[in-house]
Image (cartoon, rainbow, N blue to C red):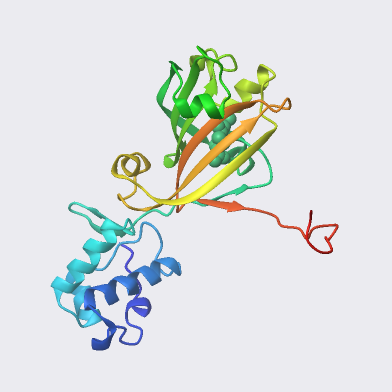
Length: 261
Ligand code: 16G
């Protein structure tokens, strides 16, 4: 078994009476060791007794710190074998200036993708879908909902709505929505994306295999054909610990003198 190295845990006494509850100080100490990479995913924690002795605190304090770290997804407990540092998923970067698909983003990084289908079918549209997609009276909407994974790590839940004349048969999508649309000459060329911080609700957290309340990103994408028609309205929930959205910023080439009219 690999232990949290003594040097990590036996640095200067980190717990001070003035530093707030001892279990929180111990929790932060272990968290810092994980963040710094001093202990790696899969490493085992020393026993409760050893930790208590090393940090000069009671076993009750250690237990409480560990319980909180398990709740936060930093540690995992396996019955009979102990407490381990939880696997940290590889972070994925997505450019905010290119209209790419999930499959393409992952392929560029050599990561395998998988989807669990949560729903796909043709439905009467909601008022919001009617407005966003500019649907005419009586038009239907195709909805697809997927849990998207890289290897075995769930990264995002995506719920997309498209006009049914653009996607008449959602069952025909093999794995990539954009590849499917591209084959029919309907791949979007422009999109507006809105990103908002969120705490994951219980059902979404369960699907994404993180504790309820974990940090997440709500992303809304409306994408358009070259004609200007909106064809995709997708709401996604991404795990906050797996994705970095990266934007390249440039100085305006033609600075404006004074206010624009
Ligand atoms: C991305 C898009 C999503 C699009 C999907 C298509 C974000 C936040 N969302 O995940 O709107 O529907 O790609 O991916 O980037 P696919 O072609 O692999 O199915």
